[in-house]
Image (spheres, helix red, strand yellow):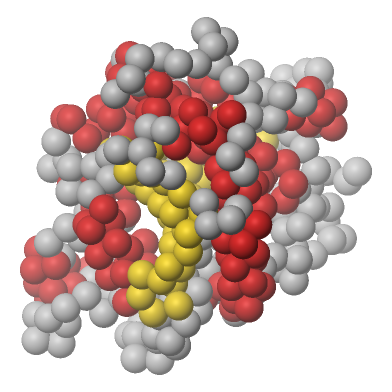
Length: 374
């Protein structure tokens, strides 16, 4: 790893981003005097009369077209291949850019109704890394970046959280069925990243019926990650609308693996990644970052890849906003990801005290009421 080749003040990917979006956010509001139902939205939001719309997001055909366009426009600097197929035979794509010695991995949209990560990597991230600019060169001299822009290619078409599998049983987590409440819907892909299938809950309860992992999308990700053996993997999701103790909306929650069998090395690396993200974006007026209150189940990607010895983090972005806030969420995701690319490339990641990740505030309450009118 080369020494620090960046300026002493960390570069902001979009230098005008913080000022532009801070001006558009709700700021300077003292919320302590408001009632418990108050929330400061930190950016655009849907009012009670507006519906969340998904028609503005990429469908499968548009996803394919966009990846082909990126490959052409970057003159092959971003290369696209397939890592497997879904239950319905759709290709699961990977975009790869760079030829650095260290591999890193980003996956998005394991849950089909959580589309903002896909939009972020297709709109901003791959364009930035593929344009041969100074930021991209500094990162890609050291790293090779692998991006799976949509894991759940079937569920995204509906959209639904689960993949699409008419043979899936109804939900019974004690038996290992992390599925929809009704049979014939699908599996929650993000519960089937167990590092050893024969140790999984589903196999131990039903070894004859499920001798192998029944979730092809999870298997495809496993195989792609194992073939590359990256330093770390970041998994991008959406969460609901939450608020902190001051009533400010939480825009993103992050977390590391907490399964008790994850070794100290990958756990600490994951904490370092989370702290880099928090320190980088927290000064921006539109960013309010917290810890995600995740569980220990080994099939969750964050834990499963930590158990494999990788740095492994979860990035949850505010959801329930449809098309309304997509632009600023794209840019928040871009800043988060590029901050850890840069810190990994220049080595500053390893100077971070992993214990300081514990100081990131915990996520607040779910804001189940309608947001205030504009």
